[in-house]
Amino acid sequence: MPTPQLALFALAIGVVIGAGVVLLVGWAYRVRMQAAQETSTAIPAGITEVLASMDDAACVLDASGLVVATTKAASRFGIRTGAVLDNSELRQLVRSVRGSGISETDTLRIAAGGSLDPRLVSARASTVGARLTLLIIRDVTERERLDQMRTDFVANTSHELKTPVASVSLLAEAIESAADDPEQVRVFASRITAEAGRLGQLTGRIMSLSRLQAAESLAQNEPVSVDEVVTASIEAHAVQAESAGVVLQRGGDRGAWVRGDAQVLVEAVGNLLANAIVYSPRGSRVGAGVKIDGDVVEIAVTDQGIGISEADRERVFERFYRADDARSRRTGGTGLGLSIVKHATQRHGGEVRVWSRPGRGSTFTMRLPRIDAPEPDSKKSKKKSKKKRARSEQALRGTPRNGDIA
Image (cartoon, rainbow, N blue to C red; front, side, top):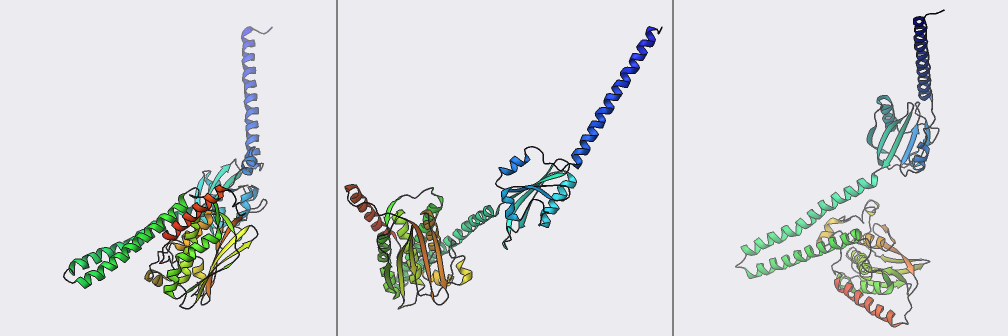
């Protein structure tokens, strides 16, 4: 019969053996799970749902670099399930992250959808499990373009304002030096007046453009007669056309209406007419025509001037850009006219198009959503008509006669 000491010893041996077996089984299970994870290409739970809800281009790649899941936007960059990444820089980013296990972000320029124009993207790669890598591609091209436009706008504005300010300063010194010569004083004074007018026009244009870009909505949003807009614009530039020896003509459909701000539209059409007059030779014609095309109203201004080259055609709507810089400065242009036309048209839910051929002339067309003519019977409508006429007259008086050259 075993002694109590022997029984206790046997029990201790059993406990040790049992614990060892449990630890061995647990270790084997963990090794098995780790091996399964290292060899598994299954996408972790929830990743598919996250990819489906993303607006950015993203994909999951396995250890061999094969794409196993994508977002809808990934197709813009030629990323498809079951294929490898076409871009070598993206492949290098994924390999680097897979080797280090640390998330990385890089800014690259890659082609999108077979386009020759590369897009600026921010690409971030992160490990998802032992064999999978998540790649997110965010297109930041538009953000870069807006930042560049903001920088250019500040630089160009500073440059444009510096020129008339410096001229006024120099002319003031010249007047002081010629104080004993009344004739020279009058000449310099007239030039100061011209420079001051140019400075006032420039600041006014900058403020108009800033309001169009910054405001969430138009100051006025009511039915506007296209006939009144075109008539007011032509009358505002009749003196300029007569001085330049250019004939203004009005044609096309009548009775078209759009919704928006009459003053903004008069200024936009007036800028197109001013450009056409300045760039047209004496004895030529400038036409303002209206065409009703279904739910769209087209306001086109056509000239027989020098035309615009294909290279300049892409940039004429940029702020301060001038196709003919020397001529524009000579005629007092600010380079903001066509930019105002573009933003004014967009604010009214439309678009502006340009056709031009060097030596044959140009046609700028504002396409705006058409509305039905308002009922003219009620007293309320008559009051609105009077208000619109008053605003048109105000726009007519406020529209510069010297033009605004793009």
